[in-house]
Length: 259
Ligand SMILES: Nc1ncnc2c1ncn2[C@@H]1O[C@H](COP(=O)(O)OP(=O)(O)OP(=O)(O)O)[C@@H](O)[C@H]1O
Ligand SMILES: [Mg+2]
Image (cartoon, rainbow, N blue to C red; front, side):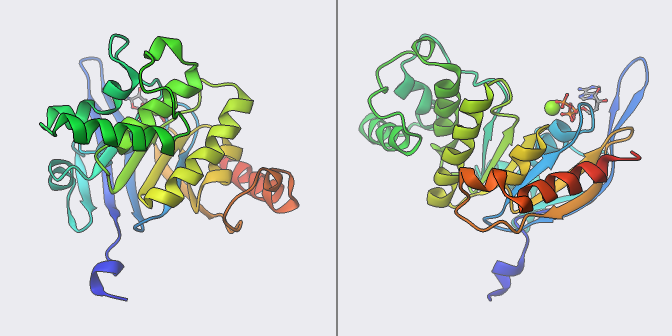
C-alpha cells in the first residue's frame, strides 16, 4: 500500500463546535475524533440535536470548529472545499422550479463556465446513473419527491466529487421509496467510488448502507460508539430480514441506552 493510500480521507481530531448566540453558548459537539477511509460509506446516526448536521457542515468547511483539527485527504477542510472535493445533498432537494431537470443538474458546471455541449452530455450521463433517463426536459415540479431527490444527487455528482456529504436526504420520503433509494444509492456509489458521509435518524437505514456507523449522543453532541457493519456487498433487500441485521439493530439501539 502506498503512503498516500494510508492517509485517511477525512480525519477529525478533538473537534469542538460551540455556537455563540445572544442568549447562551451552545456546545454542539464535544471532543469528536474520527477517521474515515477513502471510498468508505459511513453514517452519522443519532437523535435530533446531537450535532449531525453540525458535523457534516464542519467537514464541508461551511463552518469552522471552535477547537480541534479537521484534515481532508491530508489538507485542511478549506483547501479541500476550494479544490471542489465535496458534493452535498440536503434533506430537501433545493431545486430551481423554473429550470429544467437537466439545467438543475448542470448548474454547478454552468457556474464554472463549462461548455454547453459538455454540460448537456454530462446531465444525460448523470440522469442515467440515478435512473431518470427521459426526464431531462421535465421541470422539478413535475417529479415526485423521490425523483427530485435523485436529481439533487445527480447535481451533487456533477462535479465528480471525491466526497459526497448527505444530510438526511431520504427522511421526507415514504418507507418504500426510501428503501428503494437506499439500494439505488449503493448502486451509484459502487460506480462513482466516492467517500460518502450519510446523516440519518434511522438505525436500519444506517446499517443497510454503511461500512461503519458513527453513533452520536446529545447534550453535548459527542461520538458514543463506532459500529462495524460486516454485511457483505452488494447489499440486498433480503438482508434487512436477516438475523445478522436484527442483531446489529439491537446493538446500535443498545448503544443509545443510558445516554
Ligand atoms: N447556527 C446555530 N446557532 C446556534 N445553535 C445551533 C446552530 N446550529 C445548530 N445549533 C445547535 O447545535 C445543536 C446541534 O444541532 P444540529 O443541527 O447539528 O443537530 P442535528 O443532529 O443535525 O439535529 P436534527 O436531527 O434535528 O437535524 C443543537 O442544540 C442546535 O440547537
Ligand atoms: Mg440535522
